[in-house]
Image (cartoon, rainbow, N blue to C red):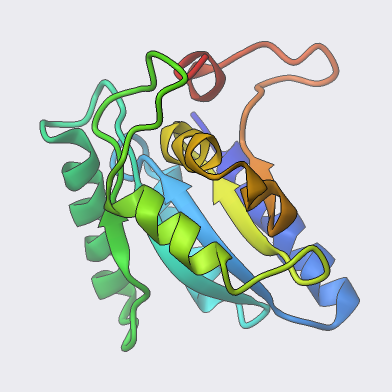
Length: 173
């Protein structure tokens, strides 16, 4: 079970609380594969220290086709069930992993790039990845200057200190 997504989000909120400021976040998720992604969405939406600018959904092998749109529907359902009155945009990202250094273009990648343009090296947008990093990788391939405007927090390894590579890392070489 991937309870680690909640741990990652708790650490984000705790660090923001310590600084006494809110943080703008884009969440990338494979919502619908396991329950932790729905919990993460609810946690972020109920945390006053976090301003969720948008949710980009991605593929996972156990999601029904079309995978990223199935995930988007799951994320929208989580937002509806928690009663979010002004939900952030939910965009379906890539339905397949990266197979080369050629970016996959979709609404999720466009959203990441467009939103990031409002940020700078002194005021970074945080991108949380709790699923495949396909869309973040595609955004970096399309615009390498994205690194100057963002910081990435990713759920990528399943043990400390040796690491190992769960699906989120192995998926997009």
